[in-house]
Length: 561
Ligand code: HEM
Ligand SMILES: [Cu+2]
Figure 1 (cartoon, helix red, strand yellow):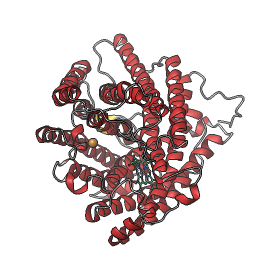
Figure 2 (cartoon, protein in one colour):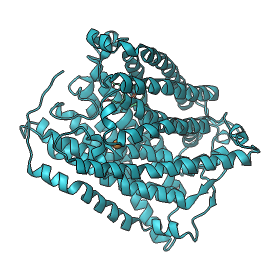
Figure 3 (cartoon, protein in one colour):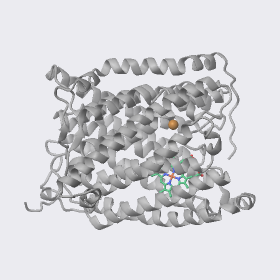
Figure 4 (cartoon, protein in one colour):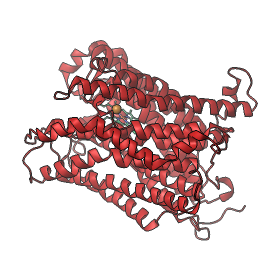
């Protein structure tokens, strides 16, 4: 087909939801770009190199930069990617259109919330990190902007659920299609678990920062925060899992091995993501060890669906490798399409998830946590999860999704492949170093050690690991530049060539399909399972929260920067 000029070719004709999805995605990647630029500076800090002097007066401190990094990468980018994927996939799969007025309202809410928050952070009025623990007190605009931003995701949640119920009415007795099942359980999980954060911000932090109440209780605030703070990592992860289950096998040249098992995985996340937050509070006072123990056990439960995912995805990739002619124990690995940047990104991301998951089990183990809590081990751990698997899954998906949405073919495929290898390598080196610095030398996280001679003296034994951080910082800078070159060159080109882009979402076929599966039918009773999830949360949090709410000890705010 001939290349058509911009004016004559309307990429969104008949598919206005494509434009919305693109806007969500591009806003998310813009956040990732700005947030990620601070990453190498932080890696250099943990190599004893201070580059913050050159950033003044734009950026006042390491901690202001770290707030930008955490908020933009972990909150803004991840949420927008979820909003893009978990509305678009079900919409395509069901052949239905979400309510576009509300969908655009949600985009505007995200943008406005983001701008308000950004203003507070960039003017150094909110250097409180992305966890904003009281009594550290930010400007009210930080909390108000964050609230508007998060509420935008609720709109997307309701839109997806509305689309699904519409489909159910038109298709009585039919099983929910797989990607839609994943999206619906995902959004229900999020509506339930985000309540902690919403209560913390709306009921306490906003009135407090406006001076309407004089203090807040730090323990209660932390407990409400972590009510959302653990499951939020599944909120980041599950869009990538959804893509790994429903598109990756096809892109790799094979089939998903089991549809019913994939449903079970998402059901387990709905049930067990939320009642586990005390594993972030093992070192907190005022929570009994019994409750901490219960949350530890439940945390181990929520590792099960990720283990099941590892096996299912690996088996599906093996299926693909064999379908492509790979033989023997390892031949199937070589036969995979390593030159496809999307498949590459997912494979490398999942590889990083293996040590990432192992570290997570250590973190979750009550007393072992004492050995690594608040050290650089923790950023070491979660950069394998969110900064590697989730981010690489998103980057890899962008390589086909942006062309699919715009009709503009991918530019710089070689750079795309290189960016993924380098991102993986850089993250692997950095997280390795951060783990050992934290574990062996107790180097604290969230610390501007390069700016403190005392700290540099205290941690000088970890010099080898520091060098690795510097090397990783350089590799990751190049990876970032390569990736964003591909994205911008693709978006900004004039050419639209529908013959060179994927016309449809590459939904996979399955080996073991859900028709007639008792398990699939059982998991499809979504509202019943949602009720069970609510009950579990009430049981695991109710008694402790009741006690905290009835024994509040509000303290005044502090601004220490
Ligand atoms: C070029 C890539 C990146 C590099 C070199 C990098 C490096 C770092 C380092 C060294 C820290 C520890 C800072 C400290 O504790 O003082 C950190 C913190 C963090 N990073 Fe990254 N990062 C990168 C990308 C990402 C991405 C893509 C995400 C999420 C999607 C992310 C999320 C976070 C979060 C949530 C924190 C914790 C912030 C806090 O403790 O308040 N990073 N990063
Ligand atoms: Cu957690």
